[in-house]
Length: 199
Image 1: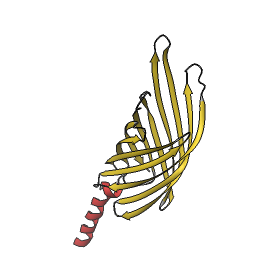
Image 2: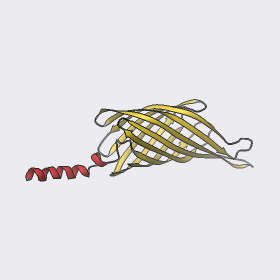
Image 3: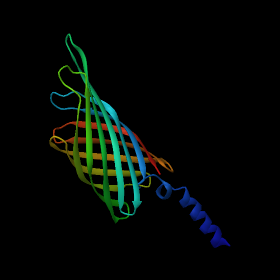
Image 4: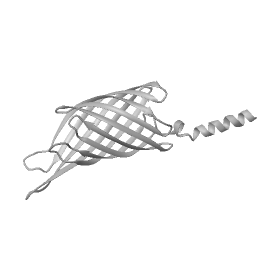
């Protein structure tokens, strides 16, 4: 009887542990985050929203998609404010391999559709298509903290490299806070923070 009580206590403890039931190291999730981008050089800083959806129908593979919105603008003397809105849709897949407990290696590839809306005189709205590919590492730092490092190459009109670090902190069984920083090869920096909902 003591063994049964002890086993029940262990199972009950494990069922409420963030490591066993938390939102970390999963591939079925939805992310939503606020994003601020500092554009190096002559560009203008942007504010926006980044979202991502991942679904793993089989082990070691997941489908992923996302939507990113960025709003930037600039003022000109006598002409008022001009706005530039950028909409980026991502769709693709990834493969992952558990190298050892708590460390996953990830490779991804997919397509991009970019649309630009602007009120700048003489410049019309437009859209274009492209692709992306990348590799990454997911590391379960503690039972409540996961860190990700990603390197991604994308091409729409020109090719760009982006380097991103992301941290997740488990708040509840299916909820984690998300925060990170990224930089590309043109020294544009973006900061983001939001939430992950695991499914």
